[in-house]
Length: 226
Image (cartoon, rainbow, N blue to C red; front, top):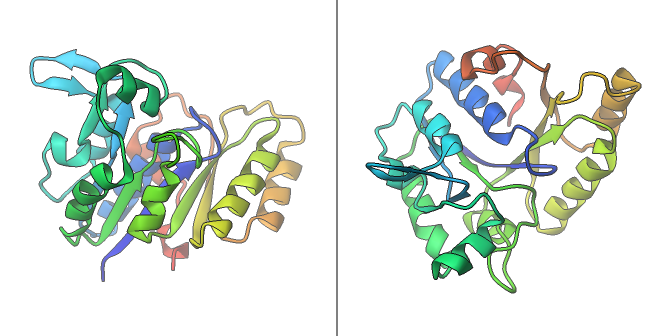
């Protein structure tokens, strides 16, 4: 049976892609076929093959279903700025509809385990009115939340979970990505998150020297997902 999720974070730079790649790797280790999408990415490098985003490439590397770069990341922008600003500067219309069809095509591949990764946090703007969260709503996907564990993460996590629920989507699970291991009262913070977030914790990922997908997968439990 195929399963698909939208993966988001409590903020930008909280390790969404690191965790997403780890989840995909764990799925592959469990004998599942995998696919992924990164509908829009800013902060891309110019290559002979066109613009390439490191996060999208990391996801592509963990896809067992044959997908091209353009299928995984249909919209790529060079400046490392908010996607709606990058699109505006490039003269590209960034809408939910422009992202919906390519992500539906990824989902149509019917991999056993598919992840669609957002950009930044839950309320990243696409246009003057729409947000990237509207894409998750249109795709009707349950959500996996990556919590970047550092001072202030509890409020960020609870507010994000509330927004996801308000948007009518289920929170399937969350991952504690410990980006600041020196966080004061770390265990107490993690316990509070576990008590307050309405979904299972899929894993606690420590700050790793080499956060490869294989290394991260060791700390994740896919069997906790519905």
